[in-house]
Amino acid sequence: MPATSAYEMLCPIARALDVLGDRWTLLIVRDLALGEQRFTDLKRAIVGIPPNVLSARLKALVAAGVVTTKDLPPPAARTVYVLTPRGREALPIIRALARWGFPELEEVGPSSPLEPVTVVGASYIPFYDRAAAAGIEERYVLEIDGLRFWLSSVPGERPDGKGEADLVLDGPSWAFVAARQGGQTLDDLVDAGVIRRTKGSARTQRHFARVFSLPTA
Image (cartoon, rainbow, N blue to C red; front, side):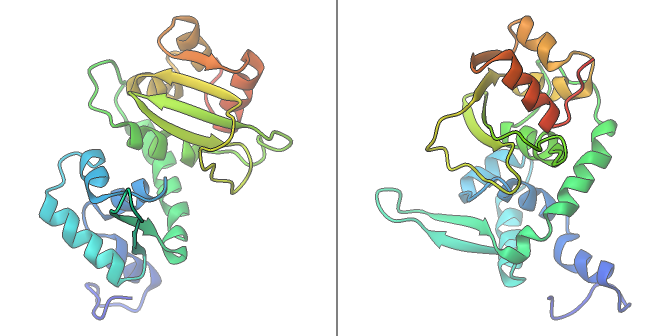
């Protein structure tokens, strides 16, 4: 908890804003929800954030117990940032904001300035439907603009990328967002070759769309 509050009231929402309310902070938490990240990973994904501001926000999050650092052993030999258990408690806030904010997005296209990490962290993970996933045990890979992301239908599971995927979809960032906006469904984009299904069946693709609440018509 911050030593001082920016708000002159004894209110849990005000205290939450003391920790998470600065500009850029929630976007850092959004990207760390995908797993450990280097400083350079965060700088690339959070378009427009000055390096000194990113450094200051990370320092504040570490001080608040939301984020911690971890030194990876050789040959990586690098420091990464990761959410603490307390930090992961904030993820429902991120998911609720993503669901609330998605209708505010303008229609995307090939020239839209999108980052793959943002696509997964703000347009897929927040829309996971636990009830729709009941009885489905599958792992999915999204290959977006050359970056690979693992998702799972199993509640609480975070695949480590070492197993086999049941479905692999490969395409540009804008197409994965367009699949949620509803002008074109995932099936439409796959049929048109904009997104390629390189592994898995049409049935598994339907499961994926259901688990992550994609429009089907």
